[in-house]
Length: 451
Ligand SMILES: Cc1cc2nc3c(=O)[nH]c(=O)nc-3n(C[C@H](O)[C@H](O)[C@H](O)COP(=O)(O)OP(=O)(O)OC[C@H]3O[C@@H](n4cnc5c(N)ncnc54)[C@H](O)[C@@H]3O)c2cc1C
Image (cartoon, helix red, strand yellow):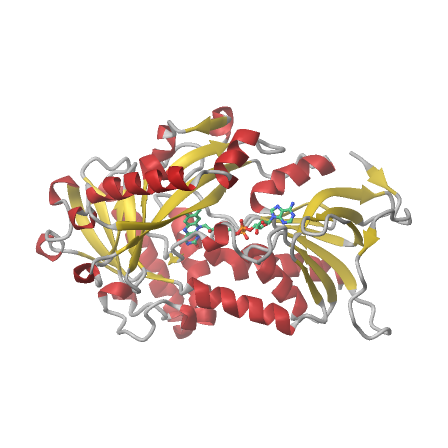
């Protein structure tokens, strides 16, 4: 591992000091990555008034990569086969809604409106037996009831007894290819109005500009540990071409798919190993008669989902086409992986979008003629189970992903926050909705340290 002495003179452009009271001694925190994870961490730290924060984002705008590529499902856990993940997700989402419920999509409509409910269809050939899925669903209901009993403020998605209900076939047979479905279930899962939430976060950061310096176009290249504590981060301004060096007490690595790269640079060996998986999600124009079509998720296996965004558009994934590539690389990501993420041509994206529409239409025939508007490419991440280390790097042929019992693919029963070296904190925001919860965890680690 390369080491620097903190007093090294800088040969490149140093960061300008922030405007602040000269008597105030604020500790410096550098956050690498201006996705939802990095931005919410910056906000949470700024609200303490104790830190001088530099938020480095390589793109011209904040939160424009994976955080901007999702349907923003406010998952209550029904999505996951793993019970611990389901309950973890439930807790985080209820906390999120308690604080930011006003950012729910369709908030002006009644809670029973089809656009404020989600539908799950357990398939006849589900990779997880339907009884196990129902057991998890019951555990979610029980946990929600318990939370509401202890604190009625948690009753944010309706009465606990209504968190899910089994549908009668006549309630869905007009929408769904019924021959493939074992059972239909309606849940109280809603969606986030992500554009409004994003705008709110950007505005809040702006309000804290005295202590949060947002450096757009700034790509972190390296982190070096100093002999007497602290770190030096070297970056390049990709717009102007100049180098930027900053010395800091604390680093938050919120760079998502680049987390392992910086770990390796620092010689970190005790951080979790992770999968990064590239996913494509298609946005389509919905015909008028489908304006209120409920969002639907087909489980568990290589199926797909449809989300109704309520504005005349829908989003879809179809497992066999959506999962483009994955890697369990524990350092720099493979060039081919990065090419698939950054450089997929518009034509390739469009073709993939059409294939996703065709795939989802096998389950929801009315979507067959949906017009492809855009294809979003994002990355999902999870910690790797021992049984999956050998999967390495793969493009296509990702069949094993569809077995939720393998590799840890279907688990997110953890925050993704770790401190493998003193003052070096990883914030892998494992779900969009974990953003504020994770930010609090990071703040707690840092404030415990700094008093
Ligand atoms: C198709 C899809 C659907 C999803 N659906 C949902 C959902 O319904 N609900 C949910 O809760 N979650 C969902 N997720 C998961 C969720 O989107 C992610 O967990 C979350 O957005 C990750 O946020 P992040 O800030 O960690 O990553 P990102 O948004 O990728 O942010 C990382 C940032 O770091 C920057 N960066 C990287 N390297 C550097 C560097 N060297 N220097 C400077 N900047 C750097 C990048 O430019 C980027 O802006 C979905 C994900 C995908 C792909």
